[in-house]
Image (cartoon, rainbow, N blue to C red; front, side, top):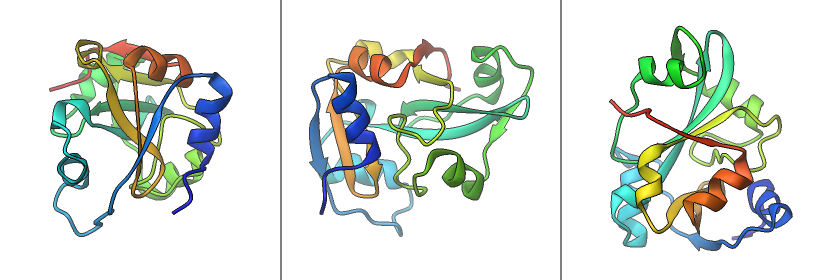
Length: 157
């Protein structure tokens, strides 16, 4: 499996340290994020999923722990909006250039405003999708925010 993706290229360009972690992607898993955490032997609070949302009709990206759910009210507030909803998968794929299951906050075709769950700051590192199914990257929360232009926010329900 190639370990070079637009996401890893963006991390290289940002000059941040990261480790690539390939794993066996299972699209039939009930919760793909929890499966990924188990597959690589990481606690679920350190493995984060990338979700594309629409806030007042505008695209945005949220990065949250795989075992947690987002509060749409908090997501809307984090981006200064009134309402939020999940972006439809085909729209998310077109907006980011990544396939669902491989969406990363790094190297998106059109970089969406991005928020990372504030809980990430409590962890020494976080694991996030590296831009393709079955490819994760491990890096510090600070480097993740720098490389994606993200801000920490209260997003969880």
